[in-house]
Image 1: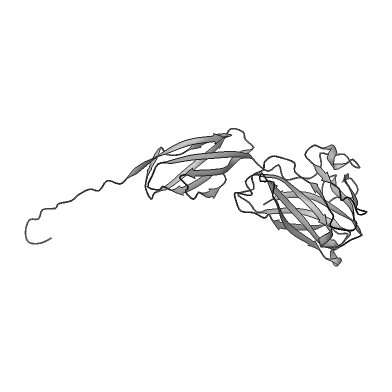
Image 2: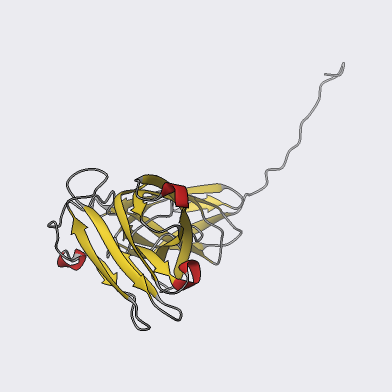
Length: 255
C-alpha cells in the first residue's frame, strides 16, 4: 500500500456456460449437471434400471473424449452445447463353475453354453459336463477334440449372454487341464461380431495337471463393453494336423 489513498478498478469477464442435454439413454438414467463452463470437468453417473446392468457405451456429441469406467464417467466441457447418449449393458454372468449341468451330459443341454465341433478333414469333437475330473465343485467342462487335415478349429462357448460389460476389467482367470501341449485360444466377441483372441499355453511338463491362467482380454474399453461371449478354442495352426486331446476348464472368473 502506498502512502496515499488508492482506487481499484476492475472488470469481470463472463465465463461461457453451455447446456448439457440427455439424448437416447437405453437401460437406465444418467445423473449430470444441466450446464457447465467451457473447460470444466463434467462428471456423470449412470443409474441402471436392473441390478445386474451397468453403464456401457457413453458418447458426447459433438464428439468429446469420455473417460472412466463402471457407472461413472467424465469429460471436459467444450465451448458448445452437448448431448449425451448412453447404453447400459448386462454385467458379466461370471464366475462360471459349470455346476448348472449334469455329469456326462452335453454342454449344450444348458442354454447359456454353445459348442462348435471341429469338422471335415477327419476332425471331430465333443463337449460335456465332467463329474470325474474337475478343479472345484462337482463339475467341469470337458472338450475332447481331434484336429484333422487342413485349417480346422473347434470351440466351446462359456457364456452365451448378450451383452457383457468387461470395460472395467481386462483379466479373465480360469483353471484348465490338458493332455496335449500347445497354444490354446481364449476368444471374446462383442456386438460387432469380431473375434478378439488371446492365448494360453500348456508346456509338456504341465500336462494332466490343473493350472490357473490369467489371460488379458483383447480389445479396448469400448470393444469390451458389449462382449457377447467368451469361448475356448483349439486350432490346427497352433497344434498341427492329426492331433487328438482333451481340454478341461473350470472356475472361470473376471478380475
